Image (tube, rainbow, N blue to C red; front, side, top):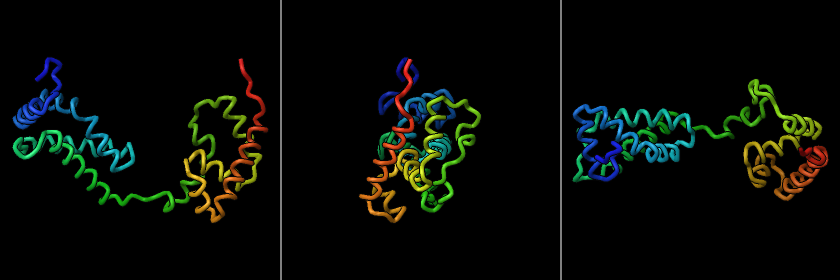
Length: 190
């Protein structure tokens, strides 16, 4: 084990797993410190949601603690073995909780009121000006701007969602952005 207490090499990780199997909490903490970022990345890529990824990562480390004695360095590297546990746990979560797309939840596509979004946080002058300008747009144009800039949808995705030609959506976006720019006027500098 390196002086920092964090396993660094394959051998260090294998030793930490062996010590974890014997109930060594310090070795487990070092194992966690050395591998948690990698395992979190794997789980996050599968789930796509930070809240679920954090829960699944915690479950994965509980399994590592419980199964550390099953690790065989002849069969896999420690990190490969741990990634497999985390990956399988994430895949179990995907199966258990059928992920729903935004298309299945149209209510989420509606932007909540400013009070809900900001949750009591004081708005800046620029935010108030932008909201005022957005409110002056036609409802369909507001919706297109929100789909593009709040939800990150492409012109093609917006066109498919609204059943409009992509060229029309492109034109609407360009014109609506010009309207917003005119409404906002020159920014007030210091």
